[in-house]
Image 1 (cartoon, rainbow, N blue to C red):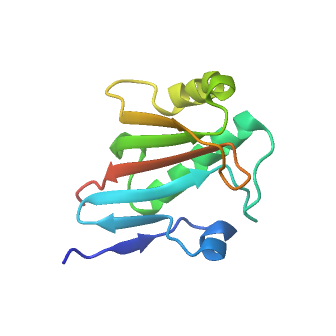
Image 2: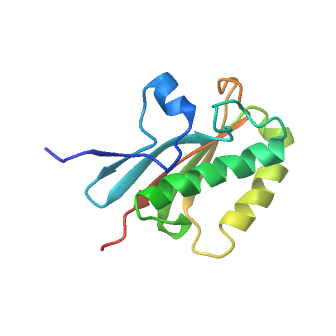
Length: 131
């Protein structure tokens, strides 16, 4: 059986405890990151959409760093959007800053009708660099 190790960023936010999940699971050389949202330290949503997307990527970056990874190690991205048509230009703008050059990770965007008070969520699979 493959060993699974929970990964949490420094200063982990309240949502992990409130909902009983790990920020990420490391298994072998893969890191499976739970959906990251634009939550403040108390778990509440950032109200401004662009700021919420940026904070989601900041939270993602902190989780990646806790596992010794960076955005360059991401293989696959899935993002969830409550209003894709209205939100996509903003998401693409921030995405272009986070992933400025090819090769880009594989990416799937999904429209949803509920994200527990949030409007954007991003989850990834990354390869953990050899030490």
